[in-house]
Image 1 (cartoon, rainbow, N blue to C red):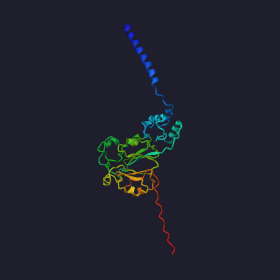
Image 2: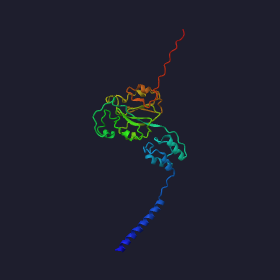
Image 3: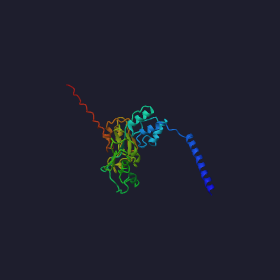
Image 4: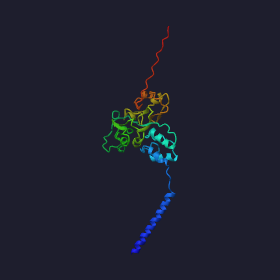
Amino acid sequence: MMNIILTAAVAVAVIGLVCGVILAVASKVMAVEEDPRFPAIRAALPGANCGACGYAGCDGYAQALASGKETRPNICVPGGASCAAEIASVLGIEAGEVEKRVAVVCCAGDCTKTDVRMNYQGVKSCAAARLLFGGPDACAFGCLGNGDCMAVCPNNAIRIEKGVAVVDRDLCTGCGLCAHVCPNRVIGIFSAKQQVINVCSNLERGKAVVDVCKAGCIGCTKCSKVCPNNAIKMDNALARVNPVRCTACGKCVEACPTGSVKFVFGGPRPQPEPEETPVEEAV
């Protein structure tokens, strides 16, 4: 009996030793060398894992940079210029300019502009509320106001006012987490330089919009017709402002009958040029 136990123990020990040797050899032969720059790049990133850079989190972006598959050190929106400079220093390249981006809630339909069509008493979640016939609000395209975006914001840059999410521009880093979690997709990430935006997401037009919201875009095309730079195009029933062409002259803002096209970042409203006084000819 003792011999059987000893034999079994020796056999197990031998098998374990052989497996250990095989694993040791395999770890050397099949090892994937990590670029020594990866830890430094990863340490420079903020760790938000927001995906705004287009990669699956900060690790994915760092690996792409270290391997050379990605050459842009300045696309981490939350990290900003300091992050880009640090990454560029590790890679020995130019950082380039980092454009500040911020979230904008494209819905002006607060409780003073629109009504509710039912009393929702479920889970305080925009995603949950939307599952119930599109939500309790009269406008099925607007902000649901239950704060899913506020819950995911890492910088406490979002608050709910009068039933609509409001973004604090100074605190927002443009990471895009709020935009991803919004079930109605009313939050967009825009360049902080862009001043004029259509803050409506209703895909209907005319009377269908007016019936549910006093601040919605009715697709009248007045803004696009008065724009001197051809910066506004109609996307079905919604006016879209091209930030490259837009000079923030304010003519579209003045022409919009519902106020959905507006200055969103507090930019100064351009003053109309003074009219020239005709000079009377001397008799």
